[in-house]
Length: 262
Image (cartoon, rainbow, N blue to C red; front, top):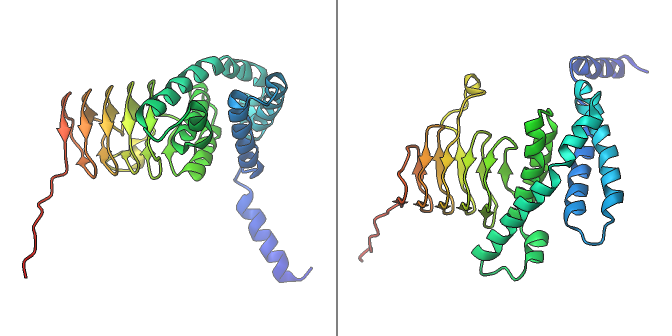
């Protein structure tokens, strides 16, 4: 082996020495996420068999992501497994919200199979339970997998209530400390984000709160941890909002229209 090749190998090896980064963790997490969705919704799969495969895959993921938790794999898995019925109930309410809100939807099966917003919400709900357990990295890998699939980014730490609807989905961003109450509708391109991204803000409430029965139309941006959108409010398209609004508000982005003359 010539000296230049040895130098390259040494440089790469040196760069890795302070990392714990098995790339297959991402692949196994994506497989786990896909299998979990199929287990809960695919009527052709054998649920008992898939649960066994999921448990073995989960154990592998824990070994790759966190050696401390891996020692309690059975306990962690059992705690996660018992959340599945509740997750299913929440997703049923979400799917019903899609069916009620979108006149283009023809059936609940279409929602499950064809709607990127529903898929993003489903993966978020899978990941959120692991986030609450304290499993590192894996919840983020799950929601980023859904992000690549759907164009919708929902941080696993967000707190989202029942009957949540995201229409079209593409470009939607929901930050880590967002709180969304029940029966909220969001359209494409909406950002629920932070006013700034300083590292000093880690652990603080950086993202807005959206109360129940709020509608947020396309490309609206709502920022700030102290920003609250009051219940029953409507936020119009392209609105930029950094302050709280009371319940029953209608916020619009009014533009002046002029007709040019020759």
